[in-house]
Every structure is written in C-alpha cells, then in structure tokens.
Length: 88
Image (cartoon, rainbow, N blue to C red; front, top):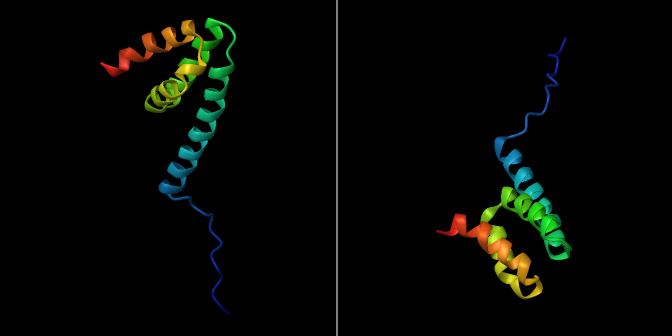
C-alpha cells in the first residue's frame, strides 16, 4: 500500500505573527487617536493619551504635533508634559 500522507498542523512563521501584530497595533492606534481628538475632559484625554503612548510613543508624538491646532489648550498642555519625558 501507499504511504500515508502526513496532515500536520500549519505552523505560522514568526514573521506572520509580527505582521499581524503590526496591523493590529495600527488599527488600535487609529481608534485611540480618534478618541484623543474627541475627548471632552482632561481626564478622558489623559486616559487615551496613555493608551496611545503604550501602543507607539513615536506615532503619538507625530499625531499630537499634526493635530495640535485641533486640541484645546489644556489638552495640548497635558500632551506636551507627558511627551516631553520621552523627547528629552
């Protein structure tokens, strides 16, 4: 009789995991960044700022810089204070 075919499990490559993680982080960041702009209170802004920074500090810095004219002065002050820790 013929040889039995081995039907093993598909093993994902590490690069597959990295790509999936990267796309997930992008989607998460975009969602959080939109909420940063819509935050009504300083507390709400701080929460979303911390979440955005935990995903990607560099992207958060660039996002705040790009949208600084859309943020209330109080929120911009909070962002600059938080991000200055990482920019020095």
